[in-house]
Length: 243
Image 1: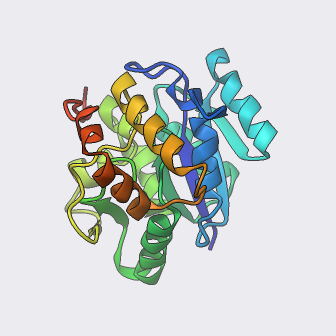
Image 2: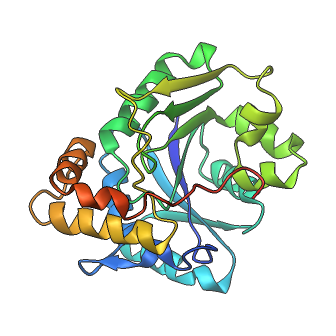
């Protein structure tokens, strides 16, 4: 079975346009994410799913520069973009990650994929819970993604990709929420606003030069040593379903 990590990426985010290519230490955030995703052992391929818009040509240029596979599809219908990517790259298992998570932890992803593959016969959808925002992953078989693509009719479900599973039809699918080792959901390590970027910038600048393969424990440590950092993006609210 082929496990494919599909990363949705676009330049026209509403709260911080161009965020995925904003640079820290001379390197765009998307490159940091790709570098970290390449350390995942239980996945066969990484694909950046971007749009057909001219504004996303820089994303394609970076993929070509880094020799990373990419797919171009609809900006608004993200579900169709995921489905098209999965079909083209013959994915049996789809791992969904968003490009606003440059600090994604490879070991955490590996554990989630390993669990899903071991329980494939009794799980249709897996999501990591109680983790810092920015370490999120979702996993489902291709056949489930295909059902979503063919049946989801509401616009929020086309935009958010997997909500057809756990919001529209939780009775239909065997859903597993895999809890993190402890509840760290109060941490926000994603990039959606200037405040988010400022925190991520500080974390990378502090850790990357001394340990390029840093993990979430290293981030927790540097946050503990700099407690004032917690307030940088503490007031930012995550966008919700339908917004």
